View (tube, rainbow, N blue to C red):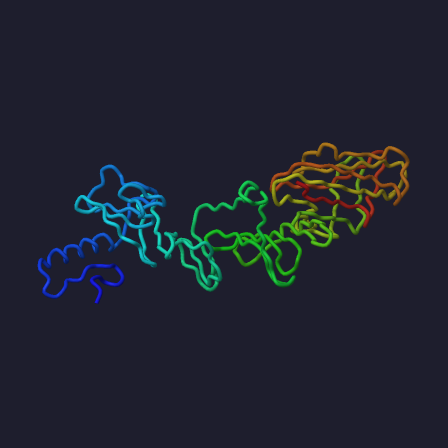
Length: 358
């Protein structure tokens, strides 16, 4: 029978042994040094100058003095002397000056943090991951930075997201209070989309890019084209609002055919154009003018025009175009005017159009 235990090499009390307390105390001292092992440092090769009783160290490679030949062993200072504790595979030690947990693998002390994590089913950072969100993180900031050339990288950084088929969804969901307010990505196709929502259920596409052509569309951009399907009579010398009672298109319903007004839904810069086609009433000596009016009373700079030469009925046309900044709620209307003689602004080809451009 051995005189010591197999794992910790604690001395046995032998049969008929005198001064059994000496052996027992030696075993207790070893236990005190090994159980709940926590060392002050693992980088020293020589004993510190003034150790306290119970201090423990992992001796660094190249031990000298009282630690000579003790490389990677645990050095315990007890009762005024250094005691060597050879580690066994599987021992764990907390390194106090580094805040690091180590384990002895039979040849050295290694960190308990694995070099790689593979095939994890769930990972939660400061929160609980589940089957619907197998990776979950609760934090206030995150950083992804490129590995530099000096570190063996390329200096580039790519974040790749992949979906199985074109009809699947791929993108970012942006939420407030866990209610989705915006989607960015490839949803239901390979077109790039940016969509927004007020309630998390009804979404409006603000931007769409065709992946085959690169053509950009803004489906919700305010835009319209209105026209009249009847001849608008205008007397001599009177600016008159043109009745435009039909639309070719009217995104977001910003043009009201009942009031003949375009109303800006949001602040921005808008581009407008108009066509006024002359139709004779009694005399071809009439001369037509046109303009765009802001909020019922202000002529928009750059929108005024006149045809001063001879008019040909249903052939002579006046084109107007201008750009203007508007705030939400501003209105735009088309006015016509005749001097010298009265006349009509002809049906179907007298029109007003506009769109938001910035």
